[in-house]
Image (cartoon, protein in one colour):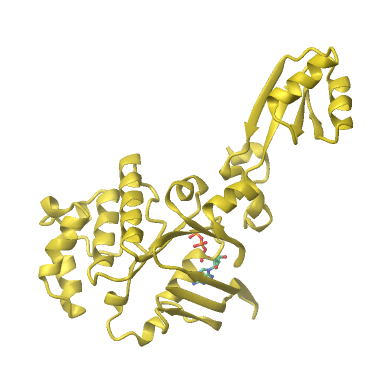
Length: 310
Ligand SMILES: Nc1ncnc2c1ncn2[C@@H]1O[C@H](COP(=O)(O)OP(=O)(O)OP(=O)(O)O)[C@@H](O)[C@H]1O
């Protein structure tokens, strides 16, 4: 498992000032499930992952993989496999040569190269230069490299960024398989929609702080609210009536939004009081909305106007 305690990273920000990228965070990434590491751009995901892998030194605090610091591991690739930057591959080298070189420099038998190429479905193109690979093939090669040491812990930074739906599905299935094999799987993303389909557990980060650490199911029930949209000619009367019953009623433009009773019961109540109803719809807020709400205060660069965001 991965365990972070009071993990902090500050970067120099000029004029003797510092910028806190990761702010004293505590978390545990458990084996046997996919943990999604979710946060808007600049939230601190990559910095955290780099500290897990010993590529950045924490300013303070600790992070361990299977009980010890990554840097203290005698055989790091057998301990933890990582995909941080899929483009960090020599473009002139073939996929097979790239993996052979990695295996040789890490004391891993070259027979493993064929196995990981098979695992990610690149066997047929293994002789081609990696520089010619599509984004999806590059991601697969990066994942093959991560799996060389058959590690119990796998860390993937934005593995589906820029992939087509087929590539996304492949990564999702692969991550699930790794978790089912009992491995610790830690995957970052800035898109809730991806995590909703991939992760069992969620760690949400914003401005370097943990905003949520819970199961995906818990996140859904806590944050994805729903309401019933009511449109009626006598909207004010309908709002007064429903509000009088202790329901949470808010008026937005030409509709009222009601929380606390299902659509059928609301319709019946209005009917019994002779109020006509033109629309009665259950509206579920999407998980993406829930994530945006949770991280709204921690997004680094807000669009200046709504129009600019489009
Ligand atoms: N080497 C560095 N020097 C200075 N500041 C840095 C450095 N690396 C990251 N930062 C800053 O730390 C903060 C967190 O960055 P980080 O890359 O970890 O975020 P992220 O969540 O991975 O975002 P993204 O999804 O955009 O990659 C940002 O404000 C970033 O500008």
